[in-house]
Length: 244
Length: 244
DNA sequence: CTGGCGCGGATGGTATACCAAAATTCATTC
DNA sequence: GAATGAATTTTGGTATACCATCCGCGCCAG
Image 1 (cartoon, rainbow over the protein chains, first blue to last red):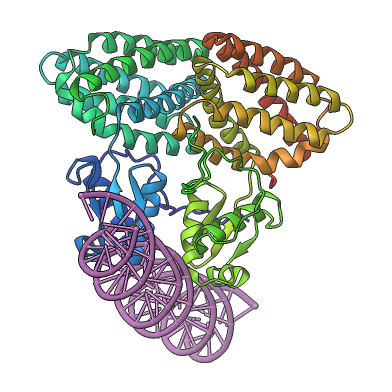
Image 2 (cartoon, each protein chain N blue to C red):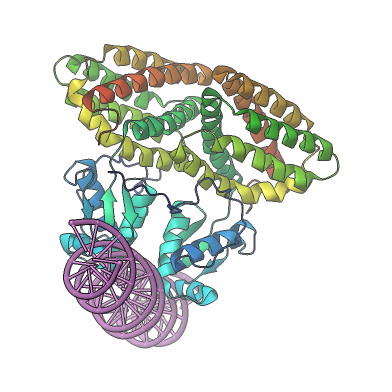
């Protein structure tokens, strides 16, 4: 008999990896530490380059070293921090190359996720919901880039959530976290993303058709262009070697 | 020059993730635990479905709970085990669907890695080395499938190692670990992989040419076919739901 | 002035102790 | 006989204590 596992909130899988940090109550201290730290890093409250000793981290979170150590292991695995014994844990600074590497993995995975979503077929309700999001994105394109970006994240996350492959989702989520900071940084520099808007329409159309190959091609093209643009912006925003 | 990786053994990155377990001396207990456990799982000495309490694991490895806990966190992150509080850690059994999901991610990443390797260009020495490996693979195709499979792993790993994107390598390595057991299981069922041999030649040729698009196309096709075949074999080897 | 060597203190790795929560079992009752 | 509830025992989560080690600093020598 299967254990049913109904109440399994063991993983926040589908939940957007967006820094939200609402219910940090009643979860094990290790997870609190993990989420808290992750939140602080992604929002920049723990700036890249910051290094803290394990003891300091524990004090910062009012916990003992054990749970923060365990949290740090996860963060390290996720690529957000680096631990150097006797030197403390350092919030990783992203070089331009790091960012390129991350985008490379992220894109490959996201394209695959979109393909799978196309293959499974988009429920009609979901399709119209996405359509409405696109409407709003186009509406705010010229005047509220932050809102546009949030919607962009939600759009991509929504499709990824429909791919039906939990491992893929998890991996994407991890890499999403890594590129988030850099994205945030170049946000104000972005020109109105009319290209993205158009490409999004095309991708959504392919998704509705359930055409895997077409989805693949369009999303791939979209990511290639967008990634290159972001890379260029980041390059402008910091010398080729600087921190992100 | 390649960094040689002499001093910095912080990560066994490029090193084949193949279970080898040679120098488990003089490394922190946590890493010993991690490698030891991983080895036992991948080779099947810790069969899927096995569940052990933390205490039992600690006793098994003659360590205290702390380092094994930390090792287990990594293994869980890697998808090899599952921890259910008060129920111990369970070696994950792969359903057919799990295997499909893993292959999906793995393929997407490997294709990308091959692309990047193509773009960077293959050093001549490396190219001839790979060529020789292909020679041997063709030689043993009919009579030693195990050897063929080892070479296949090494071949793929070699190219991945040339992609120049450490994060990509690490992620691939993690997923490689997950599909390894299933691969091992269906090994004896495989027909002589003449298709793979031919496709490998084609891919290597594309790599030598440094033709990214061609490499992509060929490797993609290769993986699609090979993955489908493996999935079918696995399906034959266990009912659609069984353990792997 | 520079480079090596050694000593002391900071630091993290590991073991262990303690506690809270959950599971199992037993008893009691319907 | 089954089901429910309580008590016990098991287990994992967290805190802490301990120790080996590594780092940095200063001293001494070349």
